Length: 262
Image 1: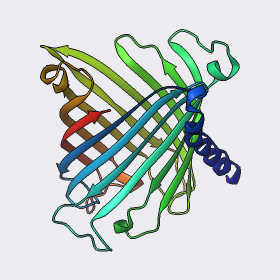
Image 2: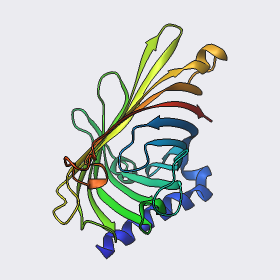
Image 3: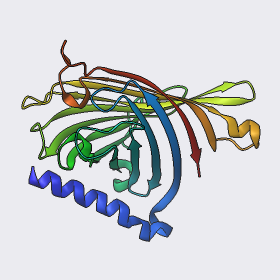
């Protein structure tokens, strides 16, 4: 797995450093910042507020997405050393159509990609050192009727240290816009279905959609800038910890949120 780690680190480094060549390689980009507040979280303290920075961009070689969650537990102190943590993901995908300058499409498949992700969690309040996971596998861009986009990625995931010795993950990502009155409702999100970790972590299913109303379109006449809405977070066997009668790790939380794109 050392080779896998080196490939993924090189992929992310290439993606980030590619900003220096933005004039030649960068096709488009968008950034956003959002705030969320919710309660009834499992394993972590019950209440949580999160400030998230997101970046997505299209390149001549594929696409790149990363986000950083800064989260706090208001009024709660964990049993370890604090009430704050950071979680981030860096996910470059390499398009075969763009790299080889030919169409890799068939039916609903409009592109085939090499999908990679590095996950980094430095929440020391969980009582452990930083956790890093490396993911790599095939990705597909699908042309599904009505969707702004629909991506389907299949990964082999390998943790660096910590619990577990690797497994498989299926991750669909989508966006769907619904006209409502004088504005739009945006329904987007993802699913992380982790299967097949036989060395420690149990199967877990993470369903994380957002439903947001485009208030900027009404307030300023500018669409896709300011949203308010909710995020729903369902996570069975959260963090790969098995749900039992004595320890409930099945999470179901609805958080209020506001998001600004720039």
